[in-house]
Image 1 (spheres, helix red, strand yellow):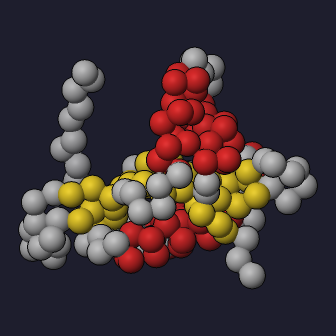
Image 2 (spheres, helix red, strand yellow):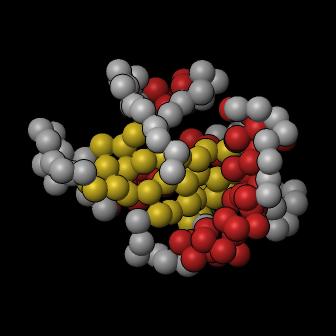
Length: 156
């Protein structure tokens, strides 16, 4: 029996807690959390839609009922097709986080496997993510490779 399950609306607060752990470790501790209150409504709605373009997979904390040990979240995106992906379906992993006391147990790998299967089932031709140096070996072992990325961003 797999420890991994698809997250539901009842997991929204824990998903935000783990996402904040990821943000704090990747960027800077002490980032504001006031956005959680506005985000919780949106994430509950997205988690409630099993046929939508968003999914999160989780492992429950083995010692703390109601607490998650790990979560991964991603979304399907459409882009105009290209060679190797004529239909333009692209998966994007935007959040992978494990509670610090549950790291190095294979939970993130298991959740990533479930998310990658979800992308395959929906016809994704590729999957993108941003990797920290610490997480890069995990993603490389799953087949991800670094790419030259000329990405830019405009904050609206």
